[in-house]
Length: 116
Image 1 (cartoon, rainbow, N blue to C red):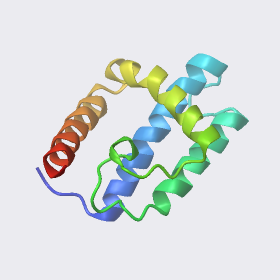
Image 2: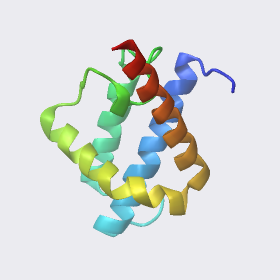
Image 3: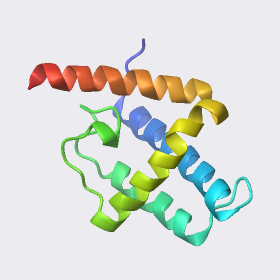
């Protein structure tokens, strides 16, 4: 598998989060596809900002695998809620991306466990 450079990893992480927030907003807030309610747009913008300024992007796959959680507590809780809701549903709406994300996350967790 081709190793992604840091910029590609940032974009991939943003894409996954965007899809999950979009799915959550459509199902929970009744927004139309391609549109987000103001609260979900704020969360999306915040997640992009965090990803853009992540100093660990070279060595991690996704935020969920990071040892340092840089989200403010209220935003961390909101993104967790989105992930808990959207994560299982991603297999139905975006199966290839969901499988790719799961495989990458498992590899990263295994790698981190080996380093401990």
